[in-house]
Length: 231
Figure 1 (tube, rainbow, N blue to C red):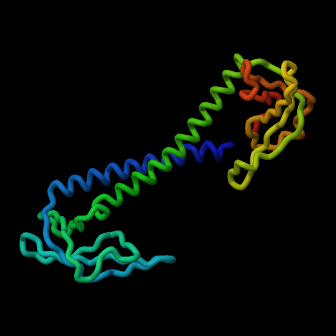
Figure 2: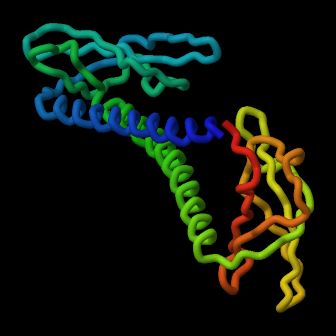
Figure 3: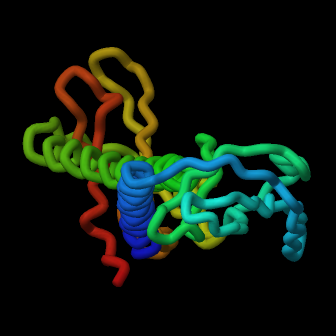
């Protein structure tokens, strides 16, 4: 289904963009620290920020630069509860050429953006890469079974929906077949790969070929090449 193909690449792309953003944020902070001067600041006010469903507080910090200029600044991100109190003293890092470019000297203020982007980017990228890897491995296994597996004729049983997987609210279909191993008399149920259309009307036979691994029927591929392709 095209939706799965889009999702796997979209997750990987979003994750990659976030990781690149984390890298640039890290480099920007590192460059800032390299040139930064320090000063003692004081929280003169807590700025209230409202959104549709939350309230946060940002500290308005005042400090005196080396030039004697009194500067006020507030971080772009807030928190609830407030991380600072009015009257609290904080260490400030700033650029001497542009004192308004200032930050509170604590870990989250300096590295929070890079850390959040890196964590979220890693999650998105790993999910996308994992989906791609699983699909690729399954494709290689199916190809190997078709070329070197043992072909057996199995009896068609039914078509079921795979409710463990859902894309856009839709569940794929699977064809079920059954085979009795003549060597052990064990009954084996085989389930096809997912199909994104109901194949019931197109199954015109009582037996369906299945390729199994030598000595291991648990590894198999249900051959549905006789079905029409979904475009």
